Amino acid sequence: MIKEQGEADRIKEEINEFLHLEICSTETVLHLLRYYRTIMFYKRKVNLISEIGEEDFVRYHVMDSLSPLKWGLIGENDRLCDVGSGGGLPAIPLKIVLRGPRVVMVESRGKKAKALIEIIKDIGLKDVAVRNQRAEEMVIEKEEAKFDVVTVRAVGSVEKMLKFAGNILRVNGRLIAFKTETDDVDVNYLVRRGFYLIANYDYDIKGLRKRRRLHVMGRKG
Image (tube, rainbow, N blue to C red; front, side, top):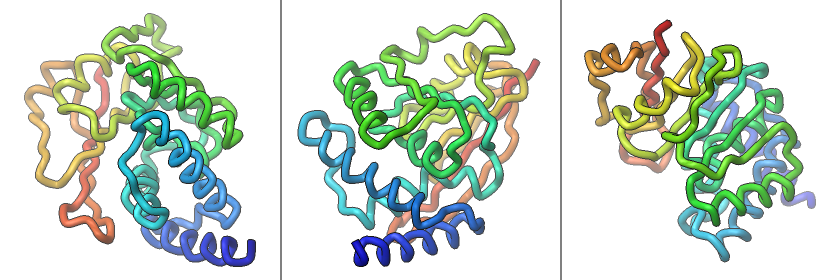
């Protein structure tokens, strides 16, 4: 236990330094490591994520998932929809660290969706739901019921995302696409789809050759 606590303290410092925020506690990191062990357990049954060690998981997946917090793009009171969640990235790390957001994870593949439900139970997350359906099939009619933030990580092109985001994202809500620095967005296409570019944010993660990029887009009224 002492060894695990010491490791958690080291990871806490690394995450906080990356985010330039004192947001992670040792307890939070222990929760993140519990998530890592749980996702690795379910990986034996369902291909949720590639085989990866604890340290690389924290850097390549957890820190990347938390990157929107560097720029205050997701808040405690936001309603968050994560599309194509797979093993729960970025939604689960964001929920563990922020605690407050109400989260819906959308996963079209049944086995992965079932595994996500079990993972949520095993690591004790509240106010998190899983929908086993295609994002294109999601339609929320009432504006007040739509999400404040929609996240998409490692799933398709930005153009593809815009085809469903308008159905579930509130006016001036934030669509956050996790990409690499070589990816770009056609601003004219955004406008034609009823969106606008808020900003692009680039950042480095130790061990990755390519810089990462967040495309942050808003929905016009």
